[in-house]
Amino acid sequence: MTGPVAVPPVQLSRDAGVTDQEIFGQLYPALRRFAAVVGAVEMDPDDLVQDAVARALAGGSLSRFDSPGAYLRQAIVNAASNDRRRAGRRRRALTRFGGGLTEAQPSAYPSDIAQLARFSPSVRALIYLRVIDGLAYDEIASMLGVSASSARMKLSRALRSIRSSGLDIPSAKDHT
Amino acid sequence: MNELVEVLDRLAVRGTPRGVDSVFDAAVRASGQTPATGSLSDVGSGPASSSIELVKFDGRSTSRTRHRKTAGFVVASLAIAGVLAVIAVVRWPDPVHQASQPADESAPSASPSDTSPLLGVPALSSSIDSKQTASAAEFGSYVAGVLAARDGTAPDLRETATRTTDQGQVVEYAYFGQTGRRLFILSGGPDLISSVPGLHDQLARGPQTVTGRVLVWPETVWKRTISLTTADSVLIISSEAIDQTGTASSISELVDLATKLSAFNAFASLPLGAPQCSPPSPIIGNEFRGTSNNAQLSGLILATKPSMHTGDDIKLVIRMTGSGPLTITATAPDGTSMTLRPTPHTGSSFDRPGDEWDTGITYQQAGCWQIHFERSDSSADVWFRVAS
Image 1: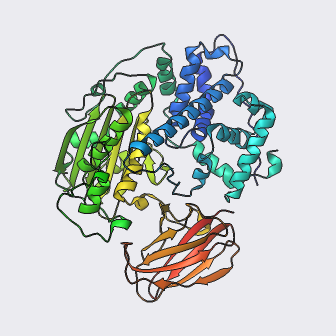
Image 2: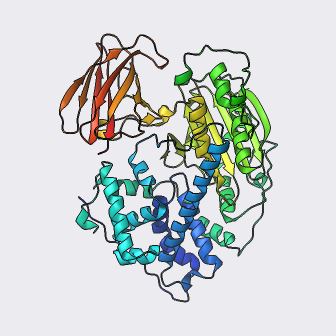
Image 3: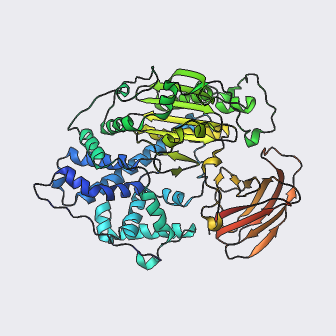
């Protein structure tokens, strides 16, 4: 049984000499992995990262943030959530106009990835930040804009649901 | 390593990274610091009629266009370069529920219910059901209608033709275009991808990702290409979209349409089951495939719920090649075995190879169940994951 791997969040220098591209260069690998888990499977992780960075840059330099990584992760979750809502609207429109397609098509291939895909982007972010990055609940909470108790409860529910689907997960003590 | 961590790791590395510079440059442009304009015709060869002006050209599409310079557009390039050419009437396998209908080569007279008043095009399913044949152009027309109904603008059919490749492969293709989007649909023989040099490599560029029922090749970021393979034919759908809504992902909807409407068999793209459900046997809709070295096994799961849970009573319909009577043994996750009694069928609309039986099973435990099928000269297995 493998517990969460403690990976300290990347702390970037706020030296005046550090450019936005250098800041982004340090964050990119971790952000891309995060986006790949949080975003829909059919969505390219780089698109999510790019949207998040574009949003951040629209307001000024990345160096203005105390923790650009946290800000960008939150932006990625928001972008993924918007994409999920948009996809839902499309599906419903297709159901109405699509010549007989039904909205409630089951996820036909019972893969383990499909088990995760049914969770919202924010819950997937929660799972990833806790299980893979090993962040504390208060760190996760501030990153995702929720309370620590809410984060703990959501993760607990998600892990319970995953466990009931037959997937082996880290022991409860690792996550509570 | 536990399974959840393994799944998360697998998800985290999906796709081919564009790289720091590419993503950052595109983000800078999208942030409004450096407006960009351009057109698709700038960046590579395509059909002569494929010059599409970009009205919305944000950072994302810029980066995608740039990506296209190196990746190339498989289908368009093949079509334009003349690599592809001549005749094909593609015969798709019968949809399960329609298999008993006689094939009628005459054009179907669509009943009112066959035509969506909003789409203004006949439902493809009606054409396929009655003619039991489909073409790239026919499928494309339907897809164009659906996209038009959804988005309010109709892609135009710019080109449709049948050609023969240098390798003698007969290919039909249809090309649709509109501002910000183009769609290529090709149909050809089952060995099209393997016989045209470089096609597989281009389609398979980057790691493969399982999305829904078929494999989607992540290819370049801004376009989506999928292939659906049957024993008789292959259909390649390539969708490009250049707008701020990321419409390139509409390929997943096209896949839904294809699988729903034309009974394309996507099993060829899915891994077969293996011991310990690594992976479980593939299920598309309610149809599954077995794993065997000397037989073909197809089956239907007749149940009220799409997923399998402890306590569910499931009826299975099985088609299996070979000779002799069938014996079925189910092995529970804890290793206990039970024999299932098969009932032979004399007639059926489940048009798959082999003889047909049905049987029933009640899953008593959660976990991976193995069901072993054995005839005199052949055997096959399936592995199903059952939730609690």
